[in-house]
Length: 323
Image (spheres, rainbow, N blue to C red):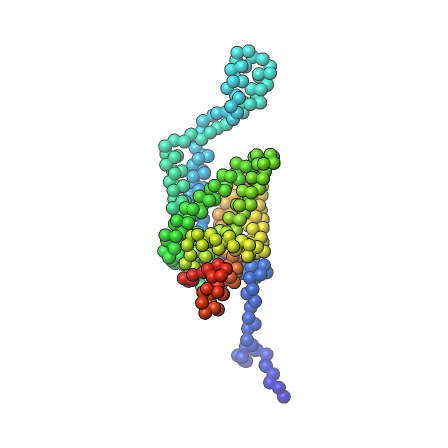
């Protein structure tokens, strides 16, 4: 008779071997991993929220303070003079159309100091905060043991100089792209401006995807900032499918949160306005890391580990592993 395995019971301690879990980074496994790491992600989000708190404080100080009334349209002054001099019905009609009043914030010295301090704090710490968050996020995606606070500051110490320099450059690029998008959007009814708006928007999406890869590569390899940009641009094409799904997921989450906020404000319900501070940054970071790291592992880590020389792997992306 062949050997037959007895079913496990309280008295029979021989348990069958556990079936190895399929950890292929698919969309199905994403939700499974997201559920498992939810507690860690909520804690990490409380650390990441310091990236935007200075910006939020600066916005609040700017909008919620002393204001002075002014008019929106430059034609108000001559129309007012015409109305006072002649008092014609046409002048009165135009004065009503172009005489909308606005309350403009008064930029006192105290407000300027607070806003300037918050901007400086964001600029100085932006790269360090992104590096620390990326290191923890990579550990969560890989399934490694994660000690959020110690790992966070370890990554900052290890990439102190490069993270600082790239953080300033990163914010500068984001600022320029946002200014261009906001400038060309109202003018997009014109064909030439609409083409420029589409080009700037495309550049913004490309840079968004590049950021998926830049910080993970910074904490994993010893690469110059130039090579970080070069590799990230290559990865936008090599990982097109995963990148597209990640961008769509991030866009959907942002839209849902914006809709929830406007709905909450319309009915006097403030919870949707506060709730994103507890989960949004970590969730978006987890999506981007889950999309990026498998591609980095496939094209940079695996060839480097399996080849006798790093020259074979560097044909595509030139990694220099330090972690």
